[in-house]
Image (cartoon, rainbow, N blue to C red; front, side, top):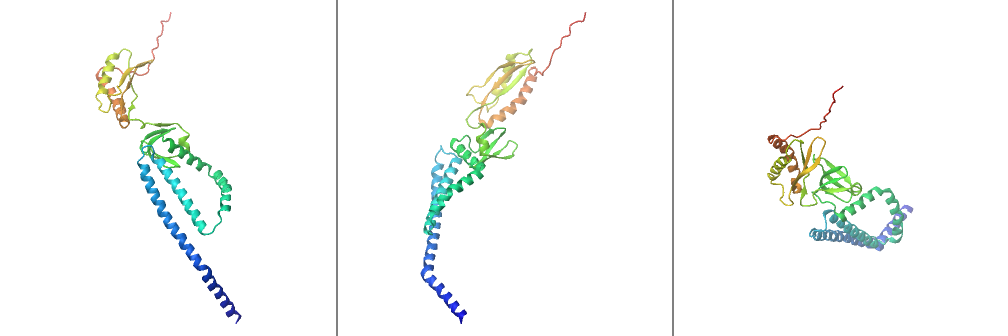
Length: 280
């Protein structure tokens, strides 16, 4: 009898809770679920609309767009979370107070990550390069294939994939070879002291003028650069589009050798003349 009485008492308590509390809990859960679904849809629409607007701007690069979209999405989700916690009756004051201490601990633990993140913000703001640009960063060079708030991915000329942390990138000198529409090719040739300098210039002008990649403006330059120990060095400076730089550079190296030989011009090598006086 006591067992039946206890079971009946438990059942009565459950039914009382269902009548008084369960309906309210169910409505609260349904409300939270609706807020979550509607909030997710609104955040998605906000990101699409913002991405479309940012894509029309020529002043905002891809990395800056990613940063803005992530920050806006993070703020929107935080607001949505605050609304949901408010519906659940959670007191946010102790949580907000605890975030200060927690933030300090996490900041100390993830200082390298935060350093990369802040460097990513600086790269996004200053835009030293874009995806597709050929850059030199410290001792590393390659084409920028991808970049986010933590790292930049480069493809080297021999097709190696290199991932560099943003902190390392922002702390080094960045040379962007794709920044301008025109690039000067630095070339050189050497002749012997007994050769005709004007004849050498004619041969070099003939080589440069035969290249369709060489631009007429700015005008190329061919001049005597240095009187070396064993040679007269000439500098050749044509201008090309950035994508034609290496095409002109490598073609010139072979053709200057062939054309100089055909013209009877000597390409000297380092040598030293030693004069021995007659012994008495």
